[in-house]
Length: 585
Image (cartoon, rainbow, N blue to C red; front, side, top):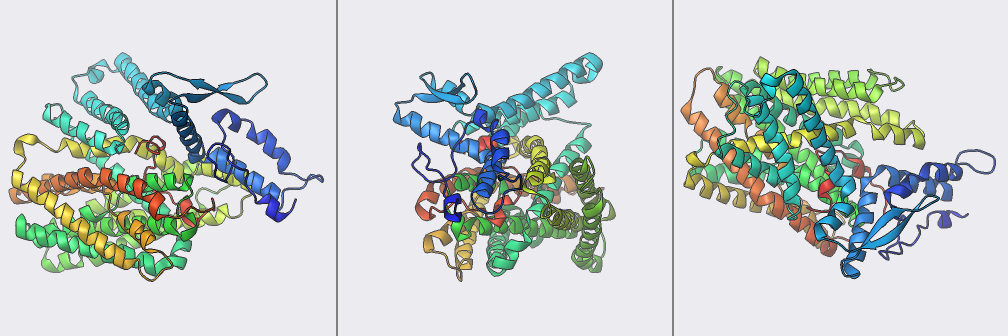
């Protein structure tokens, strides 16, 4: 078989596009045996370059990548639409394999059948909760009664998760359902968690730690080497412009001090990795923008923007709540940078060698140590009074550790690499985010009390979000000049910085928590921190659904179809690319 023949992908008979063949879940179960035969030649040696290697790579992609199953679902939906709503449901046949059987039934049932592999994850989480509740009812009945505070906290998170699933049926991001459930919960009088404020703060900090660790793991050194100048422009220019516009308007309209206005701008300017990663995985399925470096730029821009905004937020918030002299306040930033970099480098280097990659439970131990390091960085920085060191230390730890882990991965065989990536630290952090996501959005929604909302804060807050977003879009488009991109591709990169959600849910309540935890209550700071939280919620509501819709709808018109090539950045790990959101966002 020649090289050209080996790289020629079979024709997709359902969609009409060339690319890897689409398979159902039952087909996948047959791959290990079939492809093990293809991986050796007649002499029993391993595959070389060419057709066999391509076949093995395709098998690995189909087995490990959830988007392959989603491609099957997408194709089935298209066929169902052409057949007047009939759904080809895969059913097993004797001897292995599957056959398609048209099923005409209620729309909700067809949707359930198509997405069961994805919906089942949430059903599994619900079963886990019910099982744990049953055990608690038997062993600790005084704590597990529905009216107890601990159970009201648990119901908040379970209800948020279910609300997020329901909202996706309306083609909206699930985070909006979680957020609105938190608002409803609070205004029904169920969100009084008196005596558990410390536990609530811990959960919020864990969500922030998860986001920062994933941001650090997502930093790609190779992408920076190739596109460092444009990534730097896309990170700094739009961020500075948006923060400056929001701070200026907040000073003029809401009489917010400049430091508080900058704090608000840094919260709002962070791009939502939740929305962006979900959309980019959908574009990878459709092979849009793969050959132009669009994915690399957007992933890198999102990660760097979040790192900069989170770090600078920590610096400014440290100055605001500092009770030391002016000189010490000025030194808060540089000292925090030094502490964060030193801690992150040392802890990250430790993670490169501890535990050994040959250890039986290497990935599990690395995951626990990574979470522990992030927790020490964030909570320890708060204890010593240098809050800005926590964010930088968390990101640096993950980035340094990932360098060593990638070096080890380059020495693995393809089969070993597959097994390693299935249980890697980024995958485990993604799973942890599945639990922390409803926690994060429900807790920020819980803080919105209709009884104390002020109309002018809502009105001016919406204006701040709108004007700040316009400044970001304008400067982001200017920042894309200098590359080999068309106008439409530059415009698409620009709008990918529009959606806000994940970081806002994590940072929005931080100032309010610090104001409440102050030794001397300051009503002015409490009011300003409340305004930051309210406007953060407005940013999520206005930009998350609109940004997702724009990115999905404009991609076929603004991006080019390309081959299903692997980019360095497509392995970037960012918070939460939920499988159940691929088709319903």
